[in-house]
Amino acid sequence: MAVLPVQVAVDRELFLRLVLLDDTDSVEEAARKITDRILGAFVPVREQPLTVSHQGRVLDPGLSLGACQVGPMDVLRVAYA
Image (tube, rainbow, N blue to C red; front, side, top):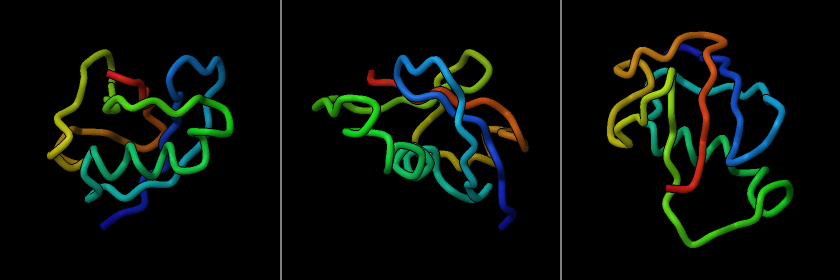
């Protein structure tokens, strides 16, 4: 397990946030951690699943961030499907 600082943008936010994740977190866990304090406060909550994109590709929610080759300070984009 290694702490993984990543930059994130949620839905249509125009700015990035720094979030600390773990490289063993699944993509689904990472999406929940990223949006925990953002949904409802800065981005409206919707009854839709969230997707996580890295370098232009949508990540498999069951894989770990390490398996998806997410590195320190990479940008993750979380959006509604």
